Image 1 (cartoon, one colour):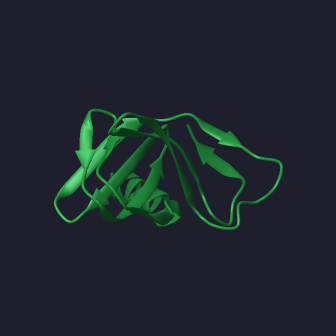
Image 2: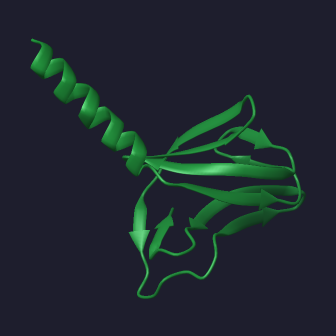
Length: 102
């Protein structure tokens, strides 16, 4: 029983340690799913098939498709869909990787 618990905790620890965090900065209020994020710096983490965008007490989780590019991205970039005064996050390219979140 103790062995199983230690194995589970070790696996959980490795999973959490492998979840790399990225930083994005939004310059205007922007929608992430159905949540409006105010301008500012946010942390971005990919956990399985969802993205977590957080800053202080603000935390947004959204399902995401992880795609790849042919080349590594130099920096983390956010692609917005702009309709009038509304901005929605469409894609996040993760700097230093070939991964993009759609």
